[in-house]
Amino acid sequence: MPGAVSPTPPAPALDDATASGVAVSGPAHLLRVTLLMAGSCLPILGAVLIAPVLPKMQDHFASTPGAKALVPLALTVPALSLALLAPFAGVVVDRLGRKRLLIVATVLYAVFGTAPLWLDSLGATIAGRALVGVAEAAIMTCCTTLIADYYSGQRRVKYLALQTMCASASATVFFVLGGAVGAAGWRVPFWIYAVSLLLTPLMASALPNPAAPPADVADTTKWLTPPTWPTGPMRRARPFAASSPGGSCPASAPSPSSGRWSSTRSRWRCRTCSTTSEWRTPV
Image (cartoon, rainbow, N blue to C red):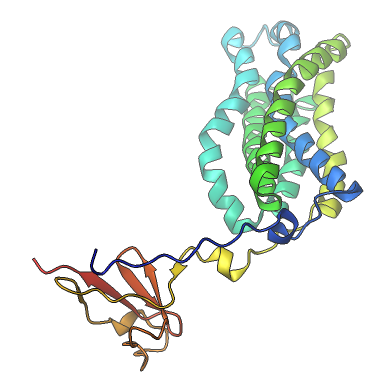
């Protein structure tokens, strides 16, 4: 077809260690995976831990109006907060950084999770449980994003599957644990939320900040060298220099063999000054 652009051969896949900048074997790697899996289990802990002690909570708040409806809400409201906020947590993760937000969220998880130990109001307890869900949304999003940052290819698929398996298996463990410690009182299981404070210093020291991807990987634009210029009904629009940080570039109209232009669908961009132009078909 006239004007067709011959794509360059695909670049060879980068090795996991090269792409992420972190080791994929050894004790440091094992600790990093363990912390990410443990962090991924914290939202499950918040969802099922207090289920066995709900009857005792209803007995304790029996004098509170609407206790029969509000006490079960203390179990489910963290999951509601997680479901509502998880889509927006990705934006916050990108702005604040994965590791930083994960550390802050694990601390807040312990603070809000243990709050019912000192709260006597059912309404305040439910509000604290809702804030636990906020921390859970940040923790789950950060752990999943860090797995994707550290690993690629089949290794990434492997650890994402391991994350799902650990989260599912932990639900049974936490349910049994909640029932065992709940025999001593309905407040006792809330002490287990403090376990995130043990993970926080380990995450701060063992989880590296994700390395920025190489320029040729981060740029999704396909660089074509040299470009094939359209012929026939295709014609080149005038480059608009407003998109160039430095104004009009003297190289904004290169020759077909210069190989200085990149293609993103029907748009072209100069490597030197980012001046763009478009291909269009006359009506």
